[in-house]
Length: 68
Image (tube, rainbow, N blue to C red; front, side, top):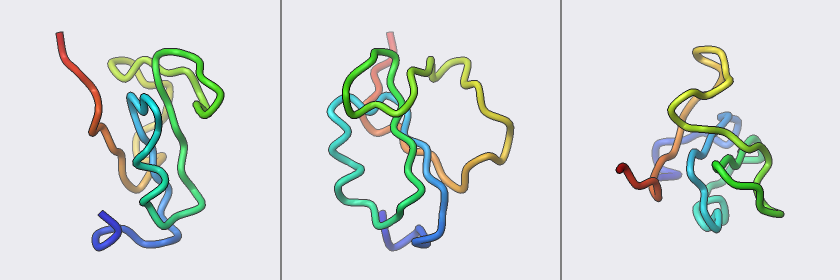
């Protein structure tokens, strides 16, 4: 993914789970979210109703979410 991102980009990860993706992204502006509180989660967020304004982030990652 780093091929498509700048180091200055602000990245939002939804449904981070164990947040392993963060280890591979070269940016300091990375917000880890999940529906459950974990020590590595920056903010508890429901991905269906995110509390962020449009265009708050340069990119979002949803690689480990499951739809029911």
